[in-house]
Image (spheres, helix red, strand yellow):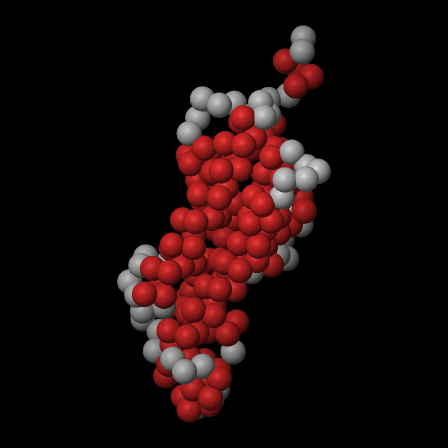
Length: 188
């Protein structure tokens, strides 16, 4: 039910979708939907949580880890795992990226996104302090650019397409952290 609601919200827009529309889409009555979800807002909240919960866990794990991997390695892993999370939850992430703060639920989701950006920026700053990243760019900007590359996947990535999530994750990490130059040619 949630998956179909997210698909409908993405297709028609959350605000333009009524519970009647959803009931029709599912072939159910509105009371049948209300048996599982108290309101359209509760459906939205569940969808946004689906988009944010795993990503939050990935970022928090990397930000809090102080043993073993360097900040740079943890940052690179966050980027890779973010791609995998997006691929696994693409419809919900698409919906998340379309919310504008029109309700308390949307505002809460936007606040969670801001906190993720802040945590990632802290990891960027730590990697720069280690000397693994250049330190002439604001960490908050780098964080937004990294998430921006990952989030752009909602526009073109298809699970049944040419590229696996691992291939895309490797490519984004390589572009973000290694650039596009051919290091063999630069050595000459």
